[in-house]
Image (cartoon, rainbow, N blue to C red; front, side):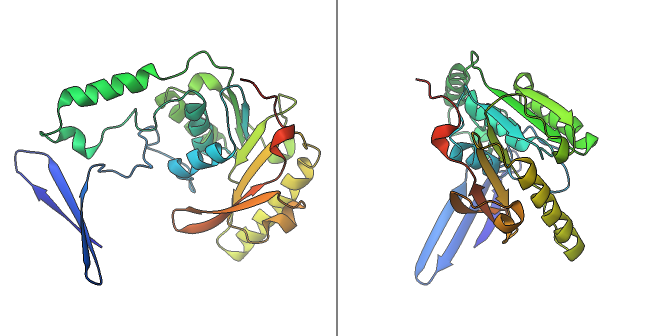
Amino acid sequence: QRQMCIRDRTGPVHQIQFSILKDQVTIMLDTTGTGLHKRGYRPESNAAPIRETLAAALCSLSRLRHYHTLYDPFCGSGTILIEGAMLAANVAPGINRNFACDRWGFVPEAAWKQERARAHACIKTDIDFQAFGSDLDPHAIELTAINAKRARMGQYLHLDTADIANFNPQTERGTLVTNPPYGERMLEQRSAQRLYSAFGRHLKYADGWKKYIISSEPEFKHYYGKQAVKKRKLYNGRLQCNVYMLSLIHISEPTRP
C-alpha cells in the first residue's frame, strides 16, 4: 500500500492512498487525517499507553452503561476511564477533534456544524456513572486528571495514587476494565507475572463484579489464578493481546430500563 499527497499551495491537503493486489487496484481518499484513535484529549501519555479505540472497545465489550461504576486500578494516563465515561455519557468519539475533510471546499461547512450540533445534543448529562482510577505512579494520576479535564469528563472520575495491593473499591459491585503492565524483557516479564498473581489474589473474592483484563502474557490465567469465562483476541497496535472476562455478567450490577 502506498500513499501520496496532492497539495494546492493555497488549499487543504488531499491524501490519496492506493493498493495493488494481483489485478485489483484500490484508490482511497483519506478523509480523516490523523488516525481515528487520536481523539484530541491525550497529547501526552505514559510510557505504554493503550490506544483510545482499543480502550473504547474494551468498555463496549464490558457492556458498560450510564448507571454503572467503572474501576481501573492500573489507569496510566486515564484512557480506559475517559473512554468509559464518554461511552456512558454518549459522547461522540471525534467530538473534540477535527478531520482532514473538514477543510475540503466541496463539503459544506453548514453540514459539519449541523452534525456537531446534533452530536452535542445527544450527550447525556443526567447519569449515575462513576469511574474510579488508581495507579502507583503519581505522574500517571496527574496525566489522567489533565486528560479527563481536556475531554470534559473530569466530573465523573475519582482518582488516587495507590498500589494494587491497596486497591479499595468504593462500591459493592462494579465493572473492572484494566490494562495491567507487561514486560518486554525477561526481568520485566517476571515482575509483571508476580503482579498478575498479586492482582488475582486481591480480587479473588470480588465474584459479583464484571472483570475485563487485557494482557499480552500468554499464561495470564495461570498467574492470575482463575479461569476466564470468555477470552477474545485483540491487538494493541501490533501487539497481540487477549481480553479475559473473569466473571459472569448476570450477577454484576442490577438491570435498569
